[in-house]
Image (cartoon, rainbow, N blue to C red):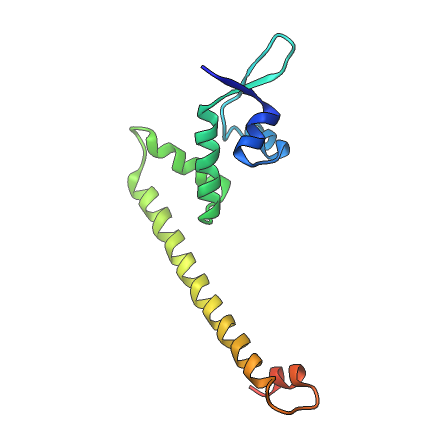
Length: 129
């Protein structure tokens, strides 16, 4: 099996070494084996775990929620809870989409307002709703 040093695996995963250390500290990734000189050696499997973490974080999950998602591979996992967690995240994303669409509409309104003659178009755009 191929092994990599901490800096190498961090670079391959596009993470900082500090992030990798933190994931080790909170036991989100398995502790690496060590060389005789004490260097940490990570297997290529750790890259898959780091990719999963990154994808889950990009989907809005916290590290604690990601730890729960990891448990989905266990045979004793509460799949109803996992489904509830995913549903909750979908609701949060839907709410953010609505909020962003409202912001987009407001910015478009302000942009159109700037085309009208005013003393201070930006200030007036905020007060003349």
